[in-house]
Image (cartoon, rainbow, N blue to C red; front, side, top):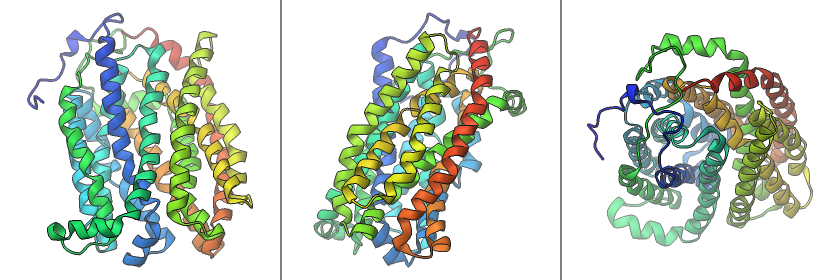
Length: 454
């Protein structure tokens, strides 16, 4: 990879017909989807390690979710915008490669943690590395595929996320079965380790390989500049803030609604192994094998169907097509998210979780496409960083955390986890639907305006 390559010349921003070849665009999409899968594997694995990490570090449910969620998102406020500004003017593939390398190293360091503070620092480091991924990745893909193809491209990218979570659960289940032999094999290199520490060490290896693969990804020319202004490689932060403020009726509902909707997914997904263990006595490994397998099946179908629905609505002349799909998914998912944790049969609970995952997946790709389509090129990374911060704080940080708060401080009983899941869903689902509805009309106006960009 040429680390010293100059940023793309904005004066050469490509015209509407000058897109990268299909092979380059699809190759970039495949590599970036795999990178996103690798980035999320450890999140899936951590859902299986709740009990041993809590035991070794002496943590409550709430403290564990601080490590899993809040530690991860804590650095977004500090690093998200600076890295995004680099992504809006520099080599995006280099930014992604450095981020992959950093989060891989920090994942490995998490395997050496022996205290709350050390684990917190490692998870914060993982978050720092991953904060470089989204702004640069979505910018590359938006400049690689025409707008009509973006929902489908982002659906495939999101399959990487869902597969990462599911493979993480399956991989974690397999590693836990051989954890004793695993840590004994690692002992000559790293000394005495707990099984969960050995699992985290191995999770760092794929990212180190992908760091090198990023050198083969094409850096596309930039497009999507507002008319009447010369394309520039970067714009002042105050101009980005002004643009965001002018379009806050579109951005704010979208940001918050997607974050809240993610709580319905991240929160339930994180606690499923513990829910089945505490309520029905299922071994964590058994739940993991079922959950991982179901996730591999239902999430891709939901993602692709959602992208096809958005494309169909757009062909019928609905300028709000992307948010329309998001609204449908949110409304339908809410009663499912409330009801499935309360079912009396563990097999029905898993079926309900799979249905919940499928429905929520419908809106993911259209929502990501919506954000990219209405944001000018020189601001995409920075506004994406703001979105990722809100999304991760609300969805990833607060999702599992709020459920733990209900369990620890409302019901005061670990066996009441199922009621915590239902209570959080019944509160946040209607709020997400209302916010999405509020943003649909201004979003449609932004889509019409963006068609004049070059």
